[in-house]
Length: 311
Image 1 (cartoon, one colour):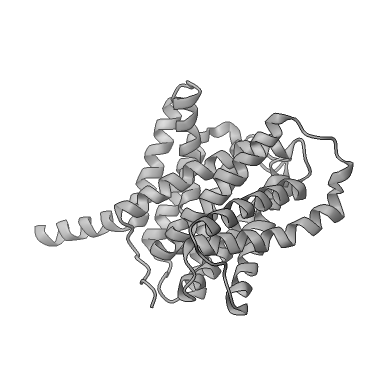
Image 2: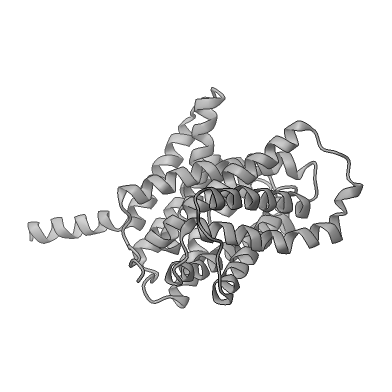
């Protein structure tokens, strides 16, 4: 028996979403460091491979078992393909062509594609005017947060921009597919581990065939640090939270993390690096907040209820 998807997220769900945004926000920095020193397939192979080893160790330490049954592994390989292999490779390559700010704005369109996909593929996550309005306001907020300069050269990196948008569409399909795992009785840790194993199985042959990593120069410690950050934080820990949130709040709600990722990056820069918050940052965060409130639906219900009382 599975838990019904909540259309309105709880405080615990929002806390998980904020944590995930911080973990995935760091992946853009890690990708920039690793992607300029190693080919995309090699970066992704190391990312998912090391994450798989970490998660297998956790599975063994906690006495859990790896996924079993062809029905479960069929979904896990599908998730590994459209939630890791395709989007990770496209984003790592896209970030070698596109400035990181523009990459973040393009990545923020993920909730739109997810909402569109699950609207047609599921029965309990339908696209509403409130969701569409919230997503639109949120994407505008991300653009304001990063600043207008990000669009000055928009279109000049056509293939890179298209690659990142294609990655967000792939994420949209993965959210719909991933909802099958709780229905099959697969726990979040087991799902994350199985997906990483599946992704590694697919990525390593691609890296060996196209990148020939044995011919590459040995990267320095900063690159290895970025790889470990990608694997342990953005991937192993990130997907443990992702699958827990997906089972509780659904694909569309979980995809809102991409609106919060730029906010996390700005706040981390302020708290850790001592950077200054500019007015555009505050304005962008405010718009993202309004978008999330509109998407959540409680604000609309409060307004309707107030009007009914006044009437």
